[in-house]
Length: 104
Image 1 (cartoon, rainbow, N blue to C red):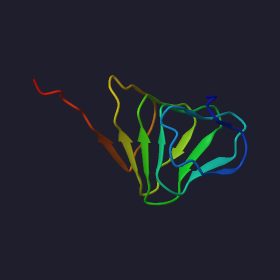
Image 2 (cartoon, helix red, strand yellow; image 1 turned 90 degrees about the horizontal axis):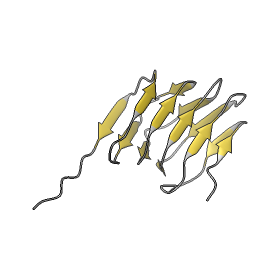
Image 3 (cartoon, helix red, strand yellow; image 1 turned 45 degrees about the vertical axis):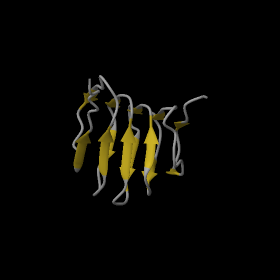
Image 4 (cartoon, helix red, strand yellow; image 1 turned 60 degrees about the horizontal axis):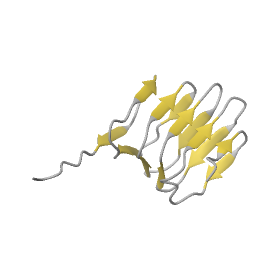
């Protein structure tokens, strides 16, 4: 599917987008997270703003890229993929990384 790209005010209403990415782009007002969400990649660019309004968990299976603004609130960003990259300047309230090790 096509990754949603937000360029105006919106409350994030996707429960599970693990196979897609989310992009908050230049010209966007704030995009608000107000419940648990899962995405492949998160990209915040230009004047885009991603706001965590609640004690929610944003699960990211791919990469995190921020050249805009991430207002972290009191939620958790959970990275649960392999070989993930965090780029840009981001402050997290609670950042968690899960690693799966295959037993032999």
